[in-house]
Length: 553
Ligand code: BGC
Image (tube, rainbow, N blue to C red; front, side, top):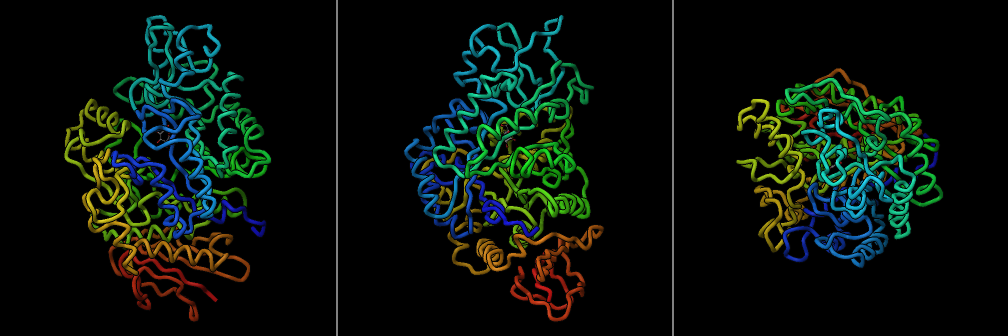
């Protein structure tokens, strides 16, 4: 614990979804210049690393996670000149840019794929995962892609199927090809040479495919079997990733964070730390306790606060001793936390502060998702046609095909759609929340008149200013960065209390997850209140959704 912390362990990372951040061209989508303009804002939050979801040239079927050319900036965002400026200006503000490496798949419009599909013997013929049909001409296996439907798509030109773990337009790359792997390392090194500070590495646990393709046990009325469990973290994946580490990361001033669904705590030694392949892994368990990954996805699964706390404590306890995780409660794939973890009528300001408190005081690097720092919330649009997200559209279809009514399927979309997190950033009370002077690519949340940056800048009790206070505390008390984690009440379903311990310092965090006043007398005499989400803490009581940080002497 007393090891020297690395810069990316001490800083705060901000996840930016560039398409929805700030438009400087009245085109309806965000631009790199918009991000440059807001660097001082990000600096004021204590941000030292800025993860951009993919900004490479892309047909945008999956909003950039379908890369057409890893060496070009998509023209909607700007140019490579803007990108170079963003990297350089970022450094002046103490902010390193973190690129999203999408290396499990490309777009079907990528030149590599266009060449690969032309024949079975062209130089890139084995850069993607191709397979012959079954004897009856059907797909090689019954795997269901993560976005729904078969994971295989027929290609007439090659008379073979290709695999797509996600959408049809996202063919999977074949990491078995040494030439392909070299091409990917060249891409990453191109960005390292440009001076980026690190990489978030997308869907990386899916890159190794089984050597023989066999059907899985069908788990739905469509007769398909979810691919997630069948093509994830396969034996041999670490050989690829160790090679990636050697070719791209070793000896460079960068950090890596892998999106590795399904890597459990007992596997951590191979995945992070000096002998592991990455610096951090995105931990999954706590982020959607109520989401079912099957056909019944739109019926939320019951969960209790104690479940969430046990999930958090499990990963916190692991990294007390070894490894490191990002702390996050939102990202571009998940609903807004104020709607996600609380009942519908819960106070949005207090709950945003409560989650912010956890985010900034658990052990790990806080990842703030754009808009979370002002308490942005979900949308409930009246019809599926209002939605853009490819996975929501597919999930909606799956629900309707499995017999759910339109109303029920839409209720699920309201709760789970990735578009909840993708609505434009709310900068001001101006038209389109100050995001664009054009027509926004996705509707602005209509609550922007009450929730926006301008308004919150001028309100000392706003969520935004509360985040700034949390950042100040992190800077003031090394315990909040380096301290070990100790939970005291994992079984309790109303409050979450935990401590951080460092040298002779103990800081306790107490969170009331309910909308009721609760008796709480466990505050030792002489403790100092460092921060409270209310103007005052009332002795012996926790007010509804109160968050409290105290220093125990
Ligand atoms: C990203 C998603 C994306 C998917 C396919 C992920 O896990 O976070 O937004 O749709 O990978 O690239």
